[in-house]
Length: 77
Image 1 (tube, rainbow, N blue to C red):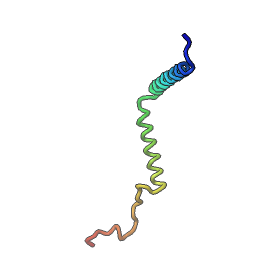
Image 2 (cartoon, helix red, strand yellow):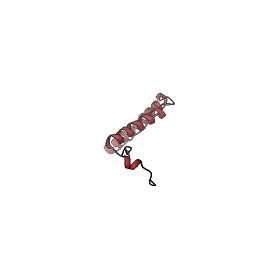
Image 3 (cartoon, one colour):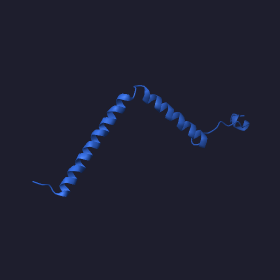
């Protein structure tokens, strides 16, 4: 029994979708195997350092220490 054109394209589309899912799962497993255990902590440290550098560059969340003599005096003086 011959299939109609829409049935054929639906079947092709479904097969393509399933193949993409398999490929994606395979890539995910491959990345997991390639990634050494301690690397995620190292990456997090690098990201934190980069974020701190950017914050310092744009003075976001960064307040330089005040070197004004009046700010160093105690309130009771």
